[in-house]
Length: 254
Ligand SMILES: Nc1ncnc2c1ncn2[C@@H]1O[C@H](COP(=O)(O)OP(=O)(O)OP(=O)(O)O)[C@@H](O)[C@H]1O
Ligand SMILES: [Mg+2]
Image 1 (cartoon, helix red, strand yellow):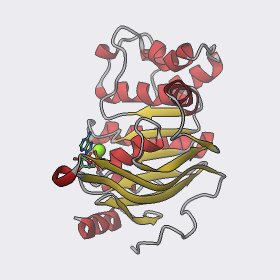
Image 2 (spheres, protein in one colour; image 1 turned 180 degrees about the vertical axis):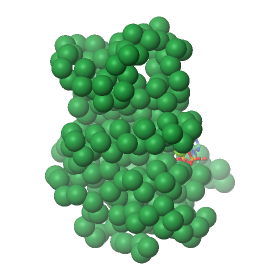
Image 3 (tube, protein in one colour; image 1 turned 90 degrees about the vertical axis):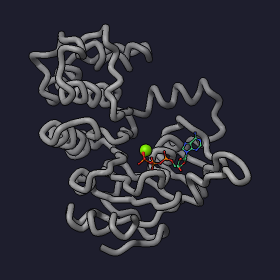
Image 4 (cartoon, helix red, strand yellow; image 1 turned 30 degrees about the vertical axis):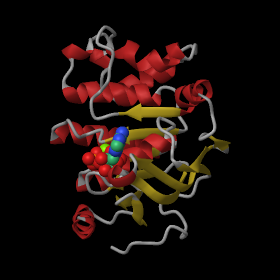
């Protein structure tokens, strides 16, 4: 598998560009304690593409995702989401952007324990003051296979079921981008497979855009595009070939 330069056309499908990040650096600490978590990253993401982000621990994956999602600000550089420069937005505008345009799935499911599965799924709409379209909610619940669990609380669901609730919750607003940071990191292989299939299906069937951080070559291989970071730099950007090729790539980065 060959690494490509950042200037080459973006791998994967060819929808409109919806996120453009330019010259991103993120520096933590000062002097001897300085850490360059990101060191000059230029990257863009097109609609309807499933991108996996890999790289050794500490290479800057979560930092990059958090900055792309407006959860953190870069030291230098800019991020545009659908033409809006987000690095200059105030907290209120950032909160609205995240609420209206972005979906999130994390390693730990972050469901509200007092709400049912269905109430958790529609929560982003409730918070935004939007009325759920019941047909869409029903479709999502059936797609994530929770028709007979919609009234259950998170504590009454398996880890895999909880993560499927989290995926449906992230999709319910039809976000511009769904971000997932190690969404299968806490699941067994069957539950991981189910969650990855859901993410893949959201891209294929709904035109969803997904950006996922993963440590698992099998997970990365189901995306359309594989980005790898090392020491805060983007060192690989190409379609994934196979899980074995991903393992070989990781060996070169270690
Ligand atoms: N708040 C912080 N303060 C200081 N250093 C930080 C902070 N957050 C991250 N870092 C450092 O920045 C670098 C990149 O961290 P990041 O969390 O992005 O890595 P990662 O690739 O997501 O790693 P992992 O695979 O372990 O999740 C690391 O060296 C980390 O120690
Ligand atoms: Mg991380």
